[in-house]
Length: 59
Image (cartoon, rainbow, N blue to C red; front, side, top):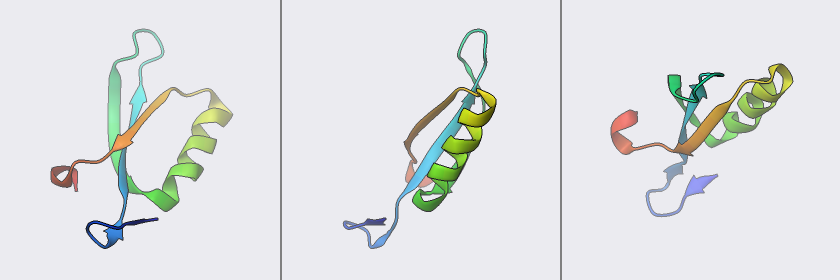
């Protein structure tokens, strides 16, 4: 996926969430092509994640 306004690939921040209270335990910034794989891995182990577009400062 390309961000048409900037001419570069979209990036997303993916946060792993605590099972008890849902707070963010850690996070990583990945390109759009990696999101599907990370979602599938999280689903396979029952991990809770939150995905949002990454800030430009998060790179």
